[in-house]
Length: 92
Image (tube, rainbow, N blue to C red; front, side, top):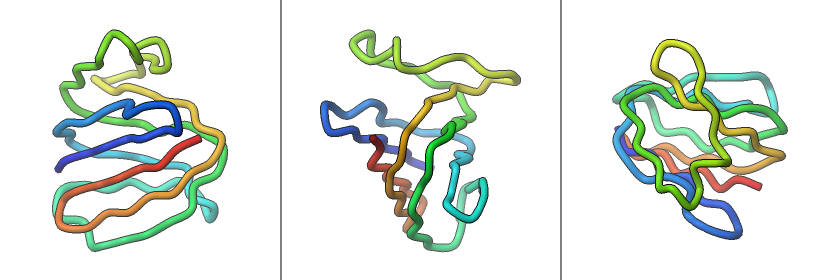
């Protein structure tokens, strides 16, 4: 599935991923390929991205490495939309 993470300052990531786990206001949830369409508010927490992630060096310092081929991004809040195997996260 395709993931795009956008902050007020820049596009932080665009690319293909295996899964995305986000901190929803009602608890963390994970999206895989062919997930049903969803729109959700996000709370402070960590976005966990699984897959072979290549980051632009201008924004790489915002991300950390997790376990088992995952990349982590701390956010304060945000909004998520998933539709047609495309996930867009607007994050603060």
